[in-house]
Length: 231
Image 1 (tube, rainbow, N blue to C red):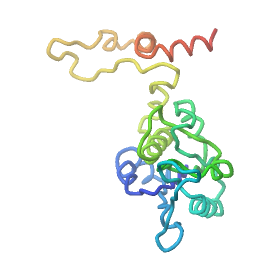
Image 2 (spheres, one colour):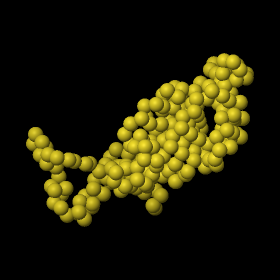
Image 3 (cartoon, helix red, strand yellow):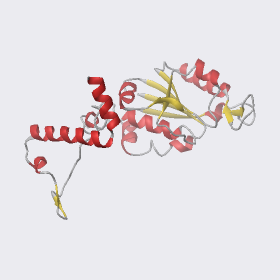
Image 4 (tube, helix red, strand yellow):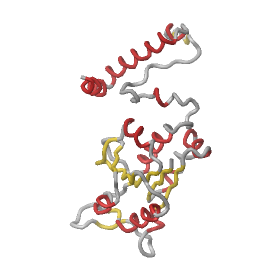
């Protein structure tokens, strides 16, 4: 998978891709992440990428020309499955969307800033709009990092245990069950006996039951939606 991220603040994206799972994925050739500084395609001697909005009002708007120039340059080199705009008014990102997008080969993520981007660019070039939640960030960089992390970890071979991603929260519309490690007893707190039994069938049944109980308790919205769908 290749992800190209368009941003006016490339420095914000240095950390997330320089460590842990994402770094290993890139080092092993399983994923590519390329961060593009939009200002390199800015207008005039000051490399302008934003301007006042027509009709007045507070806040600047990202200009269409620099973004179009960069998108067209990228598209001239390869075909992209999606050109995604990270925006608070996009479709809310969830595990199902992550699963779907993880099957793609090439993605462009455009990080919003200021009051957003010229609507004409959204109409002409953007194929999908994504929000990571019902709140507003200073820009789309952190959201792009979140989406990239969620997708890359699903690529076969990225995680040491390839079944790990399949048992994550939300994969089966349930939260993950409780997990424990050594010691088996700590300050009087004991690991459930079933997990020490060696009966893996019973352990799977227990984990599923705990996942259901946790989901009903902590995320009744997910539980209710799951059972409305199944009815």
